[in-house]
View (spheres, rainbow, N blue to C red):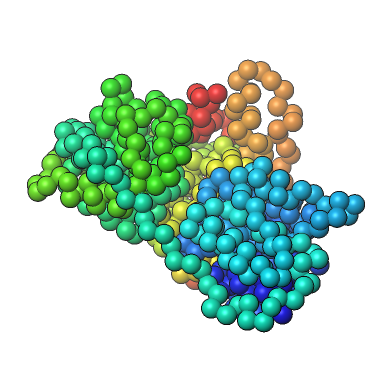
Length: 547
């Protein structure tokens, strides 16, 4: 057996059941071996789309995933997707063919490039070590929650591994969860026992059933309100005391409640500038605590009253045990409960509908789409001025219903993200929410959506511009010619790829979408919405306050 086959089979034996990407000469054999071993290969039209689809699949499925790329140019094409995954600590293995001869046209320093974007480079160096080195790469991706680049030098791929090299191969057992110290448990329990307005903010590190239930149980004991960061949206969706997302996407009521908290606890959450609105959501004198199982994460983004190093679920359970019997009302007053029932959702916040003159208000559009679609959905959102509208007006059933690849803030990732999320949750209707800039940047993957037969709704919020730049520089009188564009027939582009498509300039134009949903979608539909463009979205105004 050659190294290329042994590596492919080892990746699958370690739990990787999906591999995305673009096959070239250097990664042909390893990808074929993965398929032969039982993995599903999903061909994308660009390596960037492959990396981001793999990222989306891993986030929603909770399983390690691979992207397979050709040496040199295939690897560099995937770099933005790799950077996003690395910044998000997605358990992703980038299987990258590699040339080591510097005179080759394909040569780039792939190890240095991996490190430059925060990924962890590994390399298969010999036939004798190939299997063990592959296992080590997957183990670091899964147990270390890292994006790993597994470089496969072409000369090594053609070597023969020793007989029996794959015997008993598999992923090593996960290390035990990090237990918090007794002192930290007592300190956090004491803070919760006296807080009058505690708020829990759960982040990426809380995206598990165990963490969710432990946090809910503890919040019930101490009377805390439950918020999330954007990437954990939906985690507490069915809890009457949840206040949805904390940060730039917060509704006015959610921002008010977080801003009035006397204790904020970030659970597996960085409490960064987005989640805390550059610190403006933290009241003067409030106690701020961060719980994370990675010591380097504690206090990385802001000053804390104290930090707790520990697994989220284990820490919440230990603190609950230290509190003794009884429950407290604290922030869960009848007045707050009544307001949550009538003021929390963005759709309940009054607004002046600006629809007209051939354009639809993105708020009215998003509310109408929310009403049309089934509750069981998975929403993926690209970046841009529009992004707050689908993120906050489209409801999701749980944390597996929202896929948010925004750690790198690149536009153009949303459609590929939706492909990965759709494959991870085939029981739900996938929704890709894009701006016109991101949609056109990632348009090659429309063919992938059609080829896979995904029943996806692709919504393009089209303001014929890079809206964020328009609203950032326009008020100062700058020439905006570099960031504005003539009208584009985006619906026609969708039809060209084989999708149903409709152009929408008012809520009344959504009838074809309603018919598509009612008919039980068997293929994709593109909704090209010409949206109003005279004002920045509220989240963008918040972001600009920190510039």
